[in-house]
Amino acid sequence: MIDMKLIRENPELVKASQRKRNLFPGLVDTILELDASWRTIKRQTDELRSERNKLSSQINELKKHNNDASGLLQKARKIPLQLKEMEDKEKELDSKIKSLLLNMPNIVHESVPIGDASKNKVIKQYGKIPKYSFDLKGHEELLKSLDLVEIEKAADVAGARFYYLKGDLVKLNYAIINFASDLLRKKGFTLIQPPYMLNRNALSGAVTLAAFEEMIYKIQDEDLYLIGTAEHALNAYYMNDVIDSKKLPARFAGISPCFRKEAGAHGKDTKGIFRVHQFDKIEQFVFCKPEDSWQEFDFILSNTIELFKKLEIPFRTVLLSSEDMGLVPAKTIDVEGWFPVQNAYRELASCSNVLDYQARRSNIKYDDNGEKKIVHTLNNTAIATQRMLVCLIENFQQKNGSIKIPKALHKYAGFKIISPKEE
Image 1 (spheres, rainbow, N blue to C red):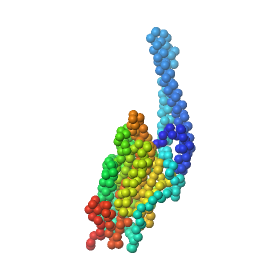
Image 2 (image 1 turned 180 degrees about the vertical axis):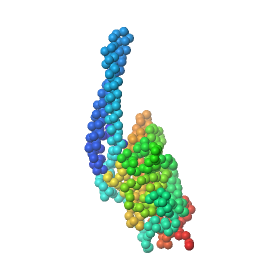
Image 3 (image 1 turned 30 degrees about the vertical axis):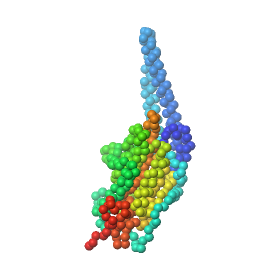
Image 4 (image 1 turned 90 degrees about the vertical axis):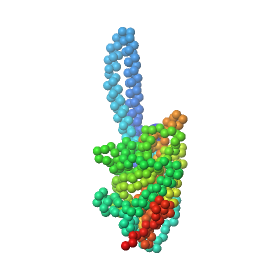
């Protein structure tokens, strides 16, 4: 949530950010008009309370000396009704302002390219794109030939975009999780297995309400939603809390399944396990002082780059444009892996600095020598395992239909290659 003080003091900055996202800048004027009305009502309400207190003192003084207070009593009796009307109006205006602020996106960082996805900027490429002497198979075809996945049966029991992982693919999935969690633990991250469900209040601290229902699965007749990412649960960890400054930066690695509707993605990446409703992910999440947030941004991005290098896949980093990144971040850099069958780079991880946006929504502060200040939060996928599995399978498939395993995963998987079963 954007600081109301910023909107009051620098509305043109906020309007410019709205334009960069191709959103209506007039929303800023609407908020300012409501804010002006709210401040007027608040001042009048405060003045009426002050008048009530003065009248009360005057009445008590008159009664103490046995003087007639009927005139003042008559005047005082009207104040509670007037005060209630004004307090109700004040609350109504405050609620409207907060609702608009909760749906307003973050301020776009000055380094972000302006425009749609065509303005995304490739920062750096890592690794060489491999060449193959044989015709490549898509991951679904290859996995089915090795009896490692069952899509049709999953569709029968759960619907489209679900799956059964089988055999060595299950071990490889957990090998990736253990590999990534070990690396982050050694870098000082606290491993967290969060709740897989959150209430609406906790979730609204992490995401804009406009996107809320499109992204998350709702539990019927419960104030609970399945998490779309551990980021939301990790953000809520310090909700309404004041963190000791000595504990900052607080770095967490959330390990969890993620559940997403993938609304609007129908017809795209429908085969296999690339785009699914349920997947596993290791998420980096940081609470830090404002002056440290860009340093932390570079740090968590470097962790993902290190992980991907160790997995020996070709990949690149891409700075997202103002219209292509989400509403919550001020800046996002995606890490895209090379998928040889698709002959394209596709998103595998996303690193975002959201500044004080989530912390302000969730009321997360730190104690700076007795002064309470809003923290900054950052998030970055370390590895989303199902999509990484697809990337590894496509890149490391062999002519005979087997799949080599990157050296970094050997000790975690317990094998170096997945080979076709002998008939």
